[in-house]
Image 1: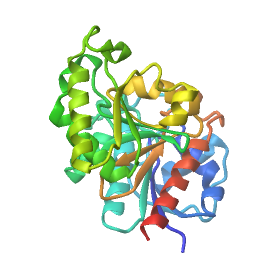
Image 2: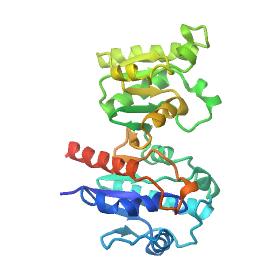
Image 3: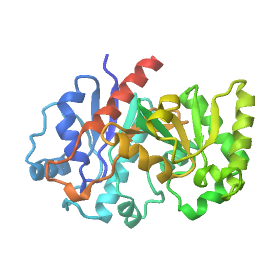
Image 4: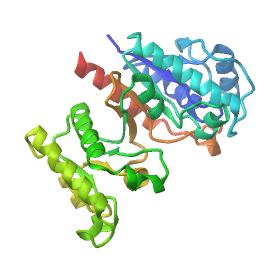
Length: 308
């Protein structure tokens, strides 16, 4: 029996609905997708895209109808994308779907709509009262983020022994990875304290404490960030933890942008997303790549099989 996947369609002014429509035939071979949108808005989008809505394109009616403005930041599209996400999340959390896949939202549109979250991950953390972990990547390389959508100036004060220890333990228990590199925060991982360094002391203490708790050397580091993504380094360790967003995701996307996905760990449900944004610059131009979305679906299907 094919798993049932709840799919929130993201910001309707972006590429999400194009990706969903173009991919439907292929993903329907491995799962039963349910799209969280209303029929009027779906018809508007399909007409703009000049794409036929498949007969078996099953939708869960939610949200209001409104004018689609391709590539535009909009309060209405921000509100709708949250409604789509909220309904798909509730549907999955109640066990009516086996997994949740989210198409991209626009953070500025959420802000205009007064949505009290910066994105999916902190909304999921609040919903489940758990510290959701954002991990992006593919089989060749996964990168988890100790801090995700916070300003760079705030990262340093967040890097504390107890917080890192808790994060690493949650990451291990939810990922089951057996060999993980933890990147340093400062250039050259501080060169033993010659460049900054207090953050690396906290990181090293947390690694040692976690490995002692687990009774095996799962985590290693702090690693020099600018060397960790070289081909030779990745042959040794291709599961990494980054202290902040760009130090982990810039090299990941340079290497594996098309095949990477976004996975939420440390939650009671399976949730994935694409690793890209709303791509307003190409919205409704039939140029959007579907590869990350299809990989997101495949990850969910495989995870459901493993749990079965």
